[in-house]
Every structure is written in C-alpha cells, then in structure tokens.
Image (tube, rainbow, N blue to C red):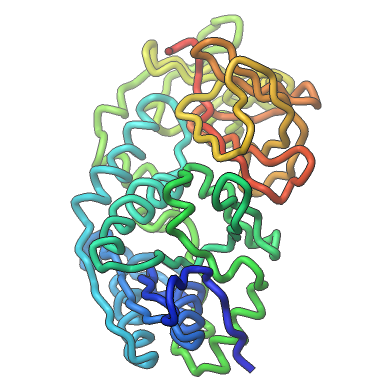
Length: 376
C-alpha cells in the first residue's frame, strides 16, 4: 500500500500545487509520486546543470543526460507536467567556478552545499514561485515541521541517509516554502515504493562523488578551470625546513598523507596550505589537531539569538562524522566553535561546521564555513 503524505500547504478545499525538483533518481521520483498520489497538483522540474555530451555518463553519476531522460519517463508515467530547464551557465558560475577558486585558496570545498543553496533553493525556488506553486518539494532526506517561530528543520529518520550536513545554508524563508516528504522514510522503504509503483528508476544506483568531476579526479577538472592553481611551490616541515617541491596547492588537502612524494621514514600529513606563499606544510598526525574552528557566512535558524554570547550546541564537522558537543562563540564580528573534546584532527578550511540543538540533537540550527582566520 502506497502511503499518503501531508505537505501542510492547503489553504482551501484544494490540496494545493507543488513543484517537485526531479533529478532523475529514485528519491526525487518517489517524492513526485507521493505528492501526486496524495492529491496535490504536481509539476516536475529537472535542471540540466552541465553539458551531458562532454560529461561522464558513468553508472551512479548525477545530473547526466540519462538522468533527464529518466525524469521525463517518471513524469510521463505519473501523468504530470514536466519541464527541463537549462541551468548550465548558472551552475558553472555559482558552483563549478567557486569549487575551483576554493582549491586555489587552499580549501577543500563541498560543492553539493552550494548547489542546494545557490541553485536548487535559490533559482529553482523562484521558478516554483513563478509557477504559482504552494511549495517546492525535494527528495532530500531531511524533515521540517511547524515551530514557535516558523518551520524548523530536523534530521531524517534514516540517520545513515540524513542530508542535514549539506542543507545547513537553508534559510528561514526557504524553509517556509520547502517540503521534504522523504524525511520519515528509510531508503529501503523508498525503493520498495518505487518498485510497487513500477517506476523505471526503482533500482537505479545512488549518485556518487561530485557530478561534474569524472571518476573523482579533481585534478583533471581543476587543470582546465584554474590552470594558474598549478604554480610550483615548496613542501616544508612545520619548522620551515625545505623537504621538496610540488606542482600546485590544488593537489593537496589538509590531512592528506598519500601522494606527497616524500621519503622521510615517518608518516607525514598535510597540516597547512598557504595560498599566498604556496607552501604546503607537513607534520605529524598530532599536528592536525585543533580546538577552535573559525567560521564565516554563518546561517542561523534557531529560536534564540547567539550573537555576542556563548551558545551550547552539538556540531558535525564532516558529513560522515558523529555529532559532538561544542560552544558556539560570538565576539564582535568573529564567530567560532570551541569543541568540548578539546581536539579534532584533519579539519580543513572550506568544510562545513553544522549546528544542532544541544537538547534535541535532531533539530538543525544552521552552520557555517570553516576558514583560516590568518587570511581574513
């Protein structure tokens, strides 16, 4: 039996109109199906984010030509209108170019966050409004519900699939318009629904890696986008001693151990990347540990303001890492996080620090980008 969903948008006797962001995968396809079968007027929209003719069509990729084809077939089987919008230029400007610039700054970016923030939840948000929709529906594993100051964001029931880390930039305004019907389901349940409905994507593999990075080889993409990022530099010890040369800081990330090209007889890790001097500093695993994380571009969707005070939260500083206690500290124009554990290794500028409620760790309070405060 196919479950019915309540998107909490009806303002009259009619259920309401929704736009569903259909990527061509099983999750967004089931989201569209549940909306349609629950009585909502449903419109499917698929974004073409890059030239599928020159991009990989590998199994498990995302946003490729096959995905658009699959989204069309699902929409046809559900008998809903479906539109394909060419967002290649917007995606390149807002996501791909920023990805390349981040590596040039010595950071390790998360382009999926930017795609959600600046394309799906920004430009597609406007498209849904133009279509006079009452809500924009996505297949993300996340939940939202009405709270005392508006809609609030919560982690998904299936914690292994939870995508809150990638959605921390979602604003209050966007939350009021967005709906996430898959938040209360597990992945096996979604595949079962797709199978029962006979959707062509029921057994389609999940997208993996970054959609515009073939086979996970960042260097191939970066060499085309930012060839200037391949300026030669030095590999040095934490004492400043010269250990070797490198072909560009874009080849390194904080915490990296392999591929350093050094034979020192002891394990060495990248502990610092300086985009100005182009020095890559290596040291021991102990040297990777940090206690204070400096944040920029913080988004806050909690009830109580934390400005100019210390606010107790739980944080996640990696998509696959566990939550841990911390203090969110605001002093003037500076915002930082001090970890309760006192130390954490392998933290890289460009990664996200996402906040969760200290008393109810399911609730998402926002987050910010980790950066190197020496370069601010």
